[in-house]
Image (cartoon, rainbow, N blue to C red):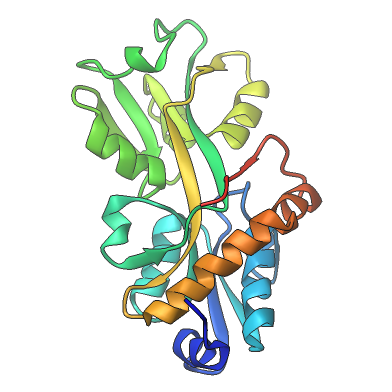
Length: 240
């Protein structure tokens, strides 16, 4: 599908400014402060604005649920979220640009050795409310009980839970600073991070975003953005 860039710009940035919702709560994808954010999602937002020839406004939030709500309520035009069926009813996603892992943290002496050991009656699992892994575990855990908080590992420690869930890089860093917590090595999910906009956008606009993401993956832009932001061990998603 050929893309009419002026039409896509009018559709995606109707105010004349591309308002991009940035989740500073995911340190793999965004770092810094609301006044000076950085990271791969910031670089992607600016790349979209540059291609459309519109200025970019970065709206920063501390959680994925807040970032999602900003776009769903019309405060933002563009978001960077994990692909999930619960969100796909309102978000038109591109293919993923990176894939990160969800892992469990447990007390050092926990009997939990594998991902399969978690889903048992009486096991309490801490998650970050509204995160991709909250949505995933809500659908998939049949016996364990989910406890939601501001951060999965924080509620895990604060309430003395059996398991804390989170993204591999920050969970690993958290466990490395303690002698009473370890990380279950196996990932419980692959989190596919994508660019999204509302489903009210024209097909040509969504096609433009999809094509640009594929171009930026293939050119090394995404890999370079991750490297500049110090994010090692993060996988650039394969071509769609």
